Image (cartoon, rainbow, N blue to C red; front, side):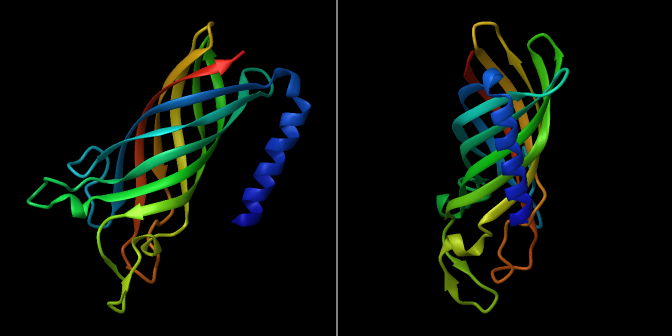
Length: 202
């Protein structure tokens, strides 16, 4: 897995060097509707959705015809919300905060409008969700109950105006198990719906 990530990063760097004259940079921020899917969770849009945010930077590297690659680096607040639902209090909220690195292939459908698809690699920064116990019943730090690396797939669309402002919708579907196997045998994934706006420096 680490070798594959390294190959992708080196490929992006090589493309950046060859297309430096056409490279665009930008900043973005937006709303997250995040949930944890899989065992014992309701999934996206249920009562367990956590309303949070993401913020970061991106670059756009033109390729051939109407295609381009858009790598991003984002701080993303994710997890699930349980406070006030079925008698639970805020101590049951599961707050997972990541540095996410999407690498998206974009296709320009018409002027300004693009579709996007690609992998998302997430690195867990912090976890807060009350007390956590491993399979042996020993209490552990909440962050230790989760894998440090998260893998997902992003699909979305964006619209860019001539003045540099850009906005879009995106859905990140987790494909890897976020739980550490020493903590639980349950298999869960991050699911995040995003609405965002930003500015691209032309």
